[in-house]
Length: 257
Image 1 (spheres, rainbow, N blue to C red):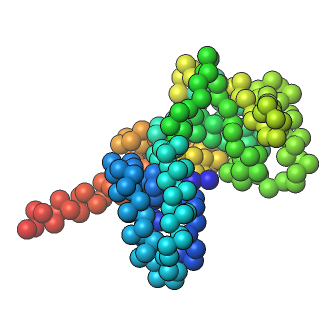
Image 2: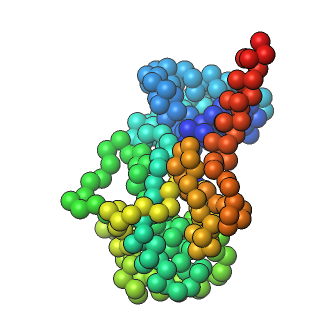
């Protein structure tokens, strides 16, 4: 799963060694150029320029078709950019009632992913509900991967069943019964926020840190960070710490000049 398409687009642009023109990559780039304010004509020109700059493969006239498909996709979806999300006190309390660390961690990750994709909904015309719903749209294989749960398929089904038996989730098939979504009932947005995150990559680590009472808040951006020691003086997340150090170095250079 790509949680930060803005960062991903910048990485793609640096890659001049594509082995083939992948629709998903070009779609992210198309959304990125639109994010920068370019029109569809300019976006197509930028995509052609990028494809033509590749070292391994040659861009040919028939390849314009994949660019057109990427632009069609980009007209339906915006670029996914991280935003602040949080897990509340009451949600954490219900998670802990499962009384099994692995099950708790999987459910925690499910809620985090559902909240993140709800807050960063990229659909140009998002589906609306009369009452706010927290829905996990992704496949359970993606969930278990993000939760670092490697047990077999049988154990995974039992785990999901245990959460559902508590009434915390409900599996709902689509109209054609070709795909299931998971409606999450453990959703209390008005409760006190406890854990804050802007990107759910490796989010599973935050749950263990919460259980071990090793979470604190970055004084710069406000996300939850993990203390290496219970009384660790850590104040900033890795990103903010790097940016502060960079600013400090630049300030020193300016003073010398």
